[in-house]
Image (cartoon, rainbow, N blue to C red; front, side):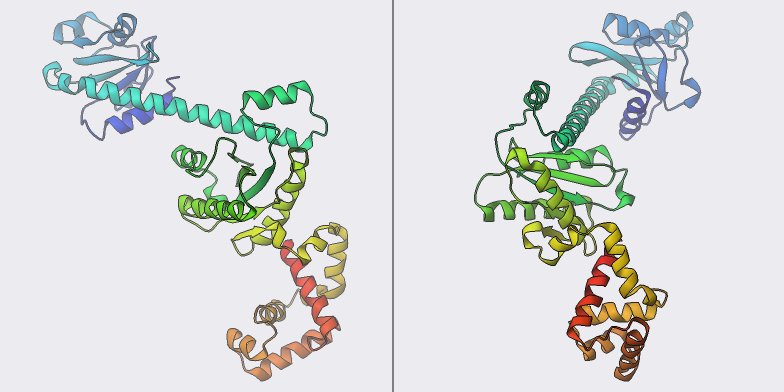
Amino acid sequence: MLTPELAEKIISEVRKYLNEDIIVVNTNGIIIASTDINRIGNFHEGAKIAAQNGKKLTINQKKQEQLQGVKPGINLPVFFQKKVIGVIGITGTPAKVSPFGEIIRKMTELLISENHFAEQSDWHSRAIEGFVFDWLQEKDWDSSFTERAKLLNINLEVSRQMVIAKFKQDNKYINREIWTQLYSWGKKTEQDFIFRWGNDRIVLLLEVSGSPKELRDKINQFHDFLKYTFGTAISAGAGKAVSPFQLVASYRQAERALQVAKNEEKLVFDEDLTLEMILDDLSPETKSEFVDRTIGPLLPDSELTDTLKELFKQNHSLKKTAEALHIHINTLHYRLKKIKDITDFSTANINDLFILFLALIILDEK
């Protein structure tokens, strides 16, 4: 319960309000955190007595001579759920530091309680993540599976919709306060679940209630909430609403939509996809061979590849493409002819143009 890591956090927080030496001691009387690092690991007899009696112990000059490892000050037992779990000590003249004692103890107990409930939330989120992972694998629900659902308060009878959001890897080690904020999203109902999915993804397992428009609005609000909480752009893909037995379908749709969304860092609904639906059914081997056969010879020349990408970005407007690339229109014509010479596909031919467009889409998936 009272780990050295938590004890260090307590020291750090208390030090903001009290410029005195502080120690945190476990119930065995061992100092596990201190503003004076030389005291960490030492035995503190006064703290052990305070822990055993569950009462404040004041140490004056006389007691300092009688007890092992102590300094003048006060030692306050710290309670959690009516049990002593440690002691916080403030070093200094007892008359000077005693007025701060009760405030410091309450602050410490509050930090411990917050940490406990955050750990419970983390555990619950990990348990749900594990359960959903099994849910996506299970074809037949046995009694053990349904019992786990009951323990986690997951209703297996309601329709579901899955949303997968991806944040940048440099946000991998987000502090616990941020995760607590995410898990407690204000729009979340009792049967909506938010949990981490791997190192860089968050899943919203949404209960399907209300009209399709209301669900879509709610998912948009969740995406906005993620962007606000992380303070950065977030890619997200939303699958379709499905029965609980078909959750894996919504998961795959969300993954497919996320693949499309990640390049532009936006929210994409699978129901809005068209061409991507066909591409999703192609094997990686087929896609790789298609790229090799079409724009493969072009790839070593980044200038020509970027020119082709910009052409599609500008909806095949030669004027806008030249302006975006800051080149003369004649230079653009030269590059497009060179693309034709290298690939044997002409941007002036609608069939060839589609092939080049498809190849670039597949290339961006890699």
